Amino acid sequence: MSTFATLSDQSSPIRVILIGAGLMGKKWISVLTASPDVELVGLVDLNLSAAEAALREAGLGHISTGTNLTELATVTGAQAVVNVTVPAAHHPTNMEALFGGLPVLCEKPVAPTVSQGLSLAAASEVTGQLLMISQNRRYYRTLAALKNNLHSLGEVGIVTTEFFKAPHFGGFREEMEHVLLIDMAIHAFDVARYLLAQEPVSVYCEEYNPSWSWYAGDAATTAVFEFSGGARFVFTGSWCSAGLETSWNGNWRMSGAHGTAKWDGENDATFELVDQGERDCPLPPDGGTASPEEIAGSLAEFVNSLRSGIVPSGEVHGNILSLAMVEAAVQSSERGERVSIDRVLSAARATALREESNPTVKAALSAWSSDRATLASLSEFAA
Image (cartoon, rainbow, N blue to C red; front, side, top):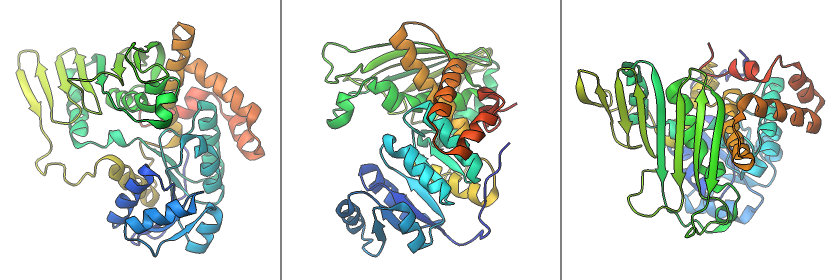
């Protein structure tokens, strides 16, 4: 298992630079300033006036701003980066941070493509810096309680997610190809990995766009994944389904040898076990108040990892398999056939080796014994 640099100072707040002053950047400003474990020391954005306005709005006019990460990190003495740029900018900004000696907490996805994700995984190895992806929907207390009690079902054979929402975003999302798969479905795909503690093997996926859809690309999809333990995960969703909408986490059903569990994505899960009847899956006695949720949960795990050296659940090597599920589903939809995850990983590494310009990163990629084995070595589900 790879190691990454930890911080010698275990008590002082970690000095953090935030990259990105958009809507999500403003949410991160709020979380970073509320945490006693970090100190926001700088905000980077190509639009300097937007960065300054975001800080003024938060009452933080004293925080340094700039358009260049390396320069601002030097001035502020930053120790870590939170990357909230658009996905297309994730690869270059993460590379700059890692080779600048800064660990990174990056919004999902790690990169637009699996090949760029593999490049970043190798860069993390070469630099010895942590790159963690914020899969913020893992950090729900009711989800953690569900996972902790899932063993009572025995062997789980099928997991289903229904996701039905009707948001009118405007802007780029309504013009995207594969909009539901690329922009949203990775959350459910990643949670399926988290719950099953297994890894994806293959997928068959169909996409379509209802006649009333306001999206240019396909806004509805059904994907069936096979997992390494034999379970099937079925995701069915639509972003143009008004009425009786699900939560943003979707409605979940897990069926096993001893019964079934259901979770509405927000409240306590419900279990019904053979010969035992129905029961709730409540939070711990303290209400789970010690566990921060959503992006605050991502930040807490990032900080803990930098101080303890414990590999976080969003470490880049393991997280790539969630992105590979998306890429494989897109390929399956386009080809009309079942697609192997290993085949996606192999093709992605070939592309990464062909396109990589950094010789040390390229050498690290070339040294991998196999794509699956290398990624699995950093996964929390490694045998």
